[in-house]
Each structure stands twice: as C-alpha cells, then as structure tokens.
Image (cartoon, rainbow, N blue to C red; front, top):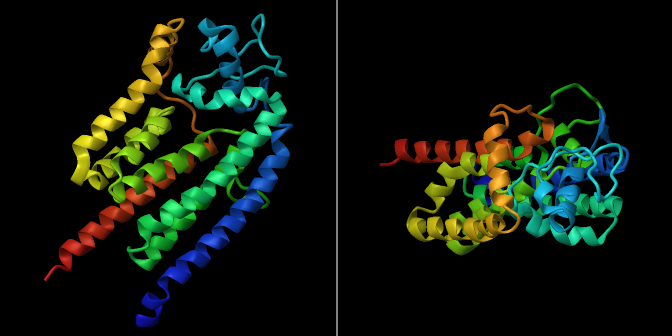
Length: 292
C-alpha cells in the first residue's frame, strides 16, 4: 500500500498520458471527418457559430434567425445551423472570421483538442489528493467521456469524436468549467470568475457545476460570486444596447423548447461535472466517517 501511495503521482500521470493518447486518436478520426460532416439538410454545428458571428457585423438583427440563408449571409452549404448561445460567445469567436469557413473550422477543432490538455492539467490537480481509484476514474471520464449512444468498434469515445466532427463547443466548455473549478479550489476567485463568465455561453452546464463551485469557493464566496456576475454582465449586457441582440436572445430562449435532444458531445462537460462532484462528495463522506 505504501508503495502505491508513494508512486501515486506517477501512476496518475501515466493514466493521463494514456487518456491523452486515446483522445489524440479520437481527434484524428473526428478532424478528418469534420470537412464532410452533414446532418440531414444542415451543416455541422460550427456553421451556427460562424454564421452568428458573420451576422453580428453584417445583419445583427438576424443572429438568432432560423438557419436558412439570408441576403448577405456567408454561404455555408447546405444550410447553416441556428445560433443558440449567449451573445458573449460571439466576442471570443469573432477573430475566426478572418479565416474562410473551413479554415476557421479546422483551427477551432485544433484549439478544442489543445483545450483537452488544459483539462488534463486541471483535473490532475483537482483529484491528486483523492483516492487513487477514484482519481483514475475521474481522469478517464473527463479526458475520454466514455459514453456511447450506439456501438461502433472504431469510434469508442463518441462524445469527443462527435464534438470534433461537428466542431461543437462543448469540448472547449469542458476545459472552461474544469478550469473554473480548479481556480476555485486553489483560491483564485478572479480567475475562477472569468472562466465562469466565459463558460456561461451555455449556462446549463454552469448551473450543474454550481454546487461544487460554491463549495470550492466557500472561503472567498462573496468575491467569487460578485466577480462572476460582473464578468457575465460585462460580456453580455452591451448586446442589449446594440441592435437589441440581448433581448432577442432572451426571447428565443423563452419561446424555445425546454427539452432538447441530447447528442453524444453534450455528455462531455456533463460527465466531467458529475464525476468531480461525486468524487468530492465521496471524499468528504469518507473523511467524516474516518475522523478520530
């Protein structure tokens, strides 16, 4: 037992390297499929981000309009998907408009792949003091998201595969959420708040992570809450004064369906948050019952 504890960091780092190697293989499969991925009559998910950013400058009142081509739109075949994220997402996505659609998609996928290495760093520091088995499970779940909606011997880790293939931003959001938890855990409220503010482009995952964020931020909770609200406001409120984009976003959320279809890539951040929350709960319970 002592030998295992002594070599625990090396064991965890080995597991991380294996997980990253498997994720790299998954990325090569998804990246090669991204240029030809089409869902029925729509282009891949990335088309929603690109057309949303394009309309921000060329047709701002129609950012949340249906995916059909509008006059002046950048042409994406067969039809771009509908942009549904908060306006703040466009702030960070806009630089990709300097590239053509396909080049921007390729770069975005590469950035998402690199974000997995950040997730690995954050995860290691969040779980390294926990039980070895639980820590290992957390690393494998967060870096591989082993949830398959259908059987495919070639595509084992479908969450990441479809995230890369469709260039869906939930892989990037996973790094942002896990990063926010890491900075809360290491008592860096401003960095935690910034990560939360950026990750809120899809608020559902942030709400799921809220209990663990509050727990990790308990020492500096008022500062973290106020700073998070400040970043969210600063990134989104200006859009209420520019072509009414903010109000249009709220209207689309109210009018939209509460229940939406779950795709494989949706499970990447969900599994990460659930796993870290359960491991922290198990850790606290075990400490409670083993106290002298």
